[in-house]
Length: 89
Image 1 (cartoon, rainbow, N blue to C red):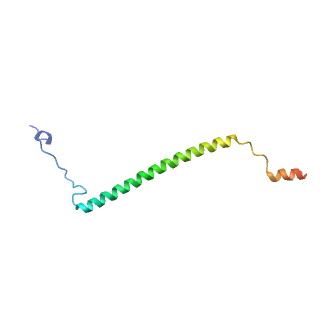
Image 2 (image 1 turned 90 degrees about the horizontal axis):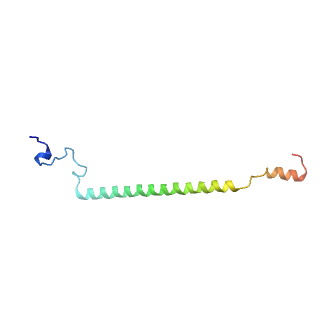
Image 3 (image 1 turned 135 degrees about the vertical axis):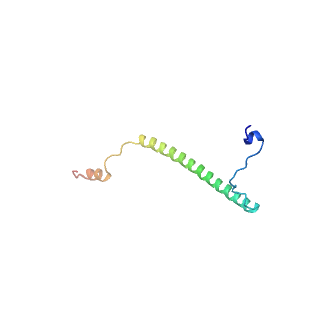
């Protein structure tokens, strides 16, 4: 017969120790709290970045629409002033 763990009903244990096996409960709790806080900061930064990118995209879209509606800029103001004064430019 086969002697696999499934057929014998035994549970295979990992040969590698887990991260928390050698830690006492207070150290483990502080480690988990710090890890959770770091994960929360990362998710907040990710959300803020996504929101900022969305706002920038909408701003650039509105800027493009505004520039299309502007009348073309006439010649330089100084040149038009000199032209009115009678100087040939």
